[in-house]
Length: 298
Image (cartoon, rainbow, N blue to C red; front, side, top):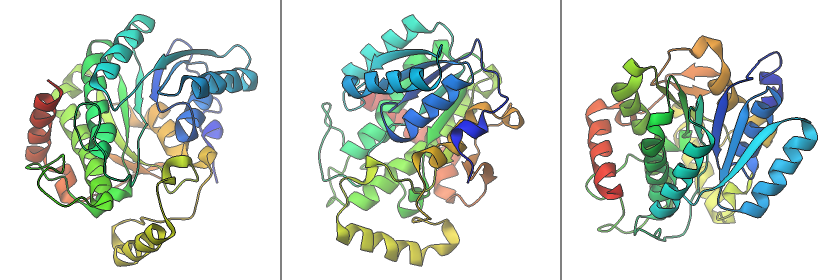
C-alpha cells in the first residue's frame, strides 16, 4: 500500500505554502510531514499546541531543514477561527493548498461555543468560515476537503442543520457533516473556479487514528450493519489503514499534476470516484447550504 511520503517522491514544492487543519495528529500530521519533505512551507493548525509542537519537532527531525509554522486553531469557536485566519494570513500572503483535514466523528450530543451541533459545527462550519476568511490568500489554490464515504449515511437537513428540532443521532449527524463537506466543495468551485481556485473532496479510507475515540463496541457493530446494507455505495468500513497509508489520497489531491484545474470531484484510493450520493452534489442544495452557513457564521 502506498504511503503519503511515497506520493511526493520526486515532487518539488519549494516556494509553495500549504495550510493543514488538524495537523497535530493522524492524517493531518502525516500530510504535513509529506508536504514538508517535498519542500513546501507547511502551516500546521490545530487546537492542541503541545501536540502541534511535538508534530513540528517530529517533522523537522524527519526532514532537516523543513519549513513549518504553527497556528492555534479551535474549529468549535468562530472567534478562534477568526484569530487563526488572521495569524495564517500574516504568515502566508499566498496559499497554494488549503487542506481542511480536521474533524470529529460520532460524538455524543454537544454544542460548540457558538451553539452549533458539534459535528456540523466542527466538520463544516468551522472550515467554511476559515476558508471564507482565507479567500484573499487563495490565489490559484487547491482546497482539499476531507469528507468520507460516511456521507452515504445521511443528507444534511437544511431546515434543521443543528439538530434543534429532532432527536439526536450521532451517526446521521456525522453523515450530514460529511455531506456538507461535499456540498461546500461544489459551491466553492461554482464561485471561484474562474479565479483559478479549485476544491476537491477526499475519502481517506478507514484509518487507525483517535478519530474513533467516541465509539463503543455497539457502535462498531452498528457500523458493520450499515456497511453490509450499503456495499454498493462505497464501504463504510474498509480494511483498516495506517495514517501513513490513509493520508495518501489527500496528499495526492494536493500535489498531482493531473488534477490541475480539476474541481468538484470526489477522490478515494488515489483516483476519482463517481459513487457519490446525488444529494451531496446537488448544486441548488450547495447554494442553500452556503447561504445558511453565511448566516450562521455571521
